[in-house]
Amino acid sequence: MIAGLDYGSEVPGQVDLSYTEYDYNRAAARPGLPCLALMVSNPKVELSRVRKQFRSRLLGERIVATVNSPEELHVQLIHALRELN
Image (cartoon, rainbow, N blue to C red):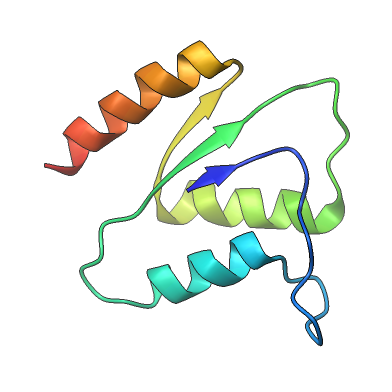
């Protein structure tokens, strides 16, 4: 998954739960399913409370790389996929 700077649309009827986090929760609940996360970073962008919480959770649970550009995303994605094997 790619965690961008915006939290995204919230799931109807769910407080502070974006579709991205909802999908991640479903994938993380499946035993043995490989899952990696790439996070887009920009220190100039102020993140919301729920976005910070979700990012902290990803850092503790999954293979995570932080990227600052599309080029870094490409490199880190290839690197992360190799680590899964």
